[in-house]
Length: 279
Image (cartoon, rainbow, N blue to C red):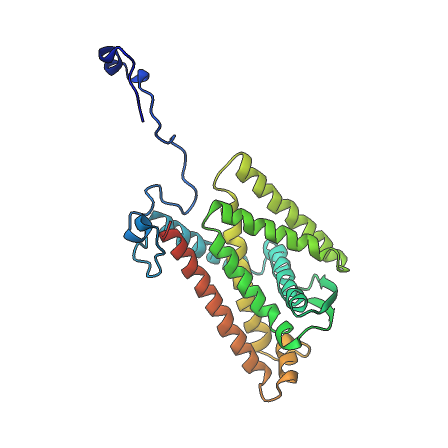
């Protein structure tokens, strides 16, 4: 609420004398409309499940970045630039197995990631029916998770902290040298983005969080297609599922994994848009 000095005439002539409580002109966060979205759902504080307010500037930026990341990943897929990202996607795959093991009261003995883009999770106990699919399905889930949380500054910070925590926790389970170097490198990278976002430039971290989500989801889809559908690899997760359910052939398992992974990616995009159009 503004106020005027006692000298009304001089106050009106001197704009500097008027004190306003209006919010300062600060840049909006990424994917967040300055006008609150302008839709009925946003105005009423409800959730825009039908995406009736889509697509505004923020949603177009989000979708454009997602498409741009996919194009970059496609053209750089077989280059050394993408090698670290492929290995971190393998790490997420193995952490999916480890998390499922812990959730079913099993014990994880070791988590390893290899330079040939392979990995292994050594565990005892737990429910194998849940642990085996958790690699590919878990990778798809976490890809969608990062995509959803990339649309908000603090949500992307939470996602980045969870990612760093997972990498730190995995270091206590007999990691090999490749995984140690990989995790330390990505911890430094992610923490660096967090500090820049908090201290210097906003938005910044959200671009990285979205890229993590798009790449991990894409890698999971490609890995399922390459390892489980186009061929049958002895020792793969699909082959292990086939041993549990002999009537379900490995390629059939791969198709089921692919459908679940595709559903997670679609759900991630949808929920991200719902979040943005509802705020």
